[in-house]
Length: 140
Image (tube, rainbow, N blue to C red; front, top):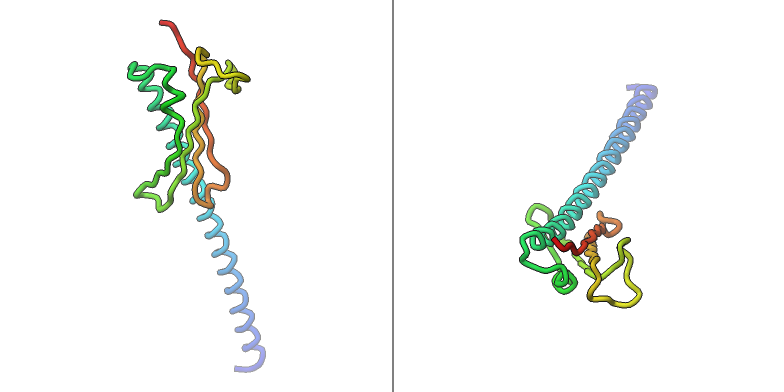
């Protein structure tokens, strides 16, 4: 093997190493995107499940709209067997106006109630996922 063949072999090694590192970084970046998307979807499902539970209890008349502010003020942790992470779920229920804004003074006879669910978790869930639902007392 002469000098030119050695240089070409060395350049080939450098080229293939650079290509493999570039592909590897792209794969890791896509893995991060998938992990982030998975946790955002799971946080959304957690929020929907809590709010749908409140809907079901209201529609079936198991609870009254006034008891939302008592039953849906909590903080808990949830973990699932298919994801090796733990989520912190914070639910806040309060009296509000028709736009969902807090009242200046508490009014237990308010016809509007708001439940806000905030899910925070591991590093992939970079910002807490928040979902809010506004409930209105009806007289049917």
